[in-house]
Image (tube, rainbow, N blue to C red; front, side):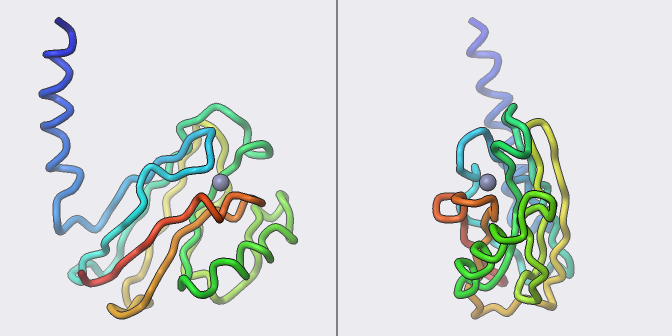
Length: 148
Ligand code: ZN
């Protein structure tokens, strides 16, 4: 009855991960075009918010690379288009002031961490995180809220 053993442990971890006032989150991805987290809430009490981004797949960065890029929602499509133009050698990340923060592009088995200075966020702002690998941003995006 291996199951009976595993389930209580999994449930026990949930409160620690989703604790209301934590200033840190783990976000995973895989060999498909998706984040495992579609929405992130950054508490107003955090001066800095840390995102630990993981690629839990196996494909290399050039085939199924992912990054975690944060901007205002209105700027997402333009940044993603410019990202495709600058190419893999630049992690598909354009030099653009509208990017609030971004991880490098990572491949399967890799992780990257970024910190967000919450002084750069406003509570009535609309923010989206997305992947700038060409073709990914339409499916691979989530909503970030600050101060709620
Ligand atoms: Zn991606």
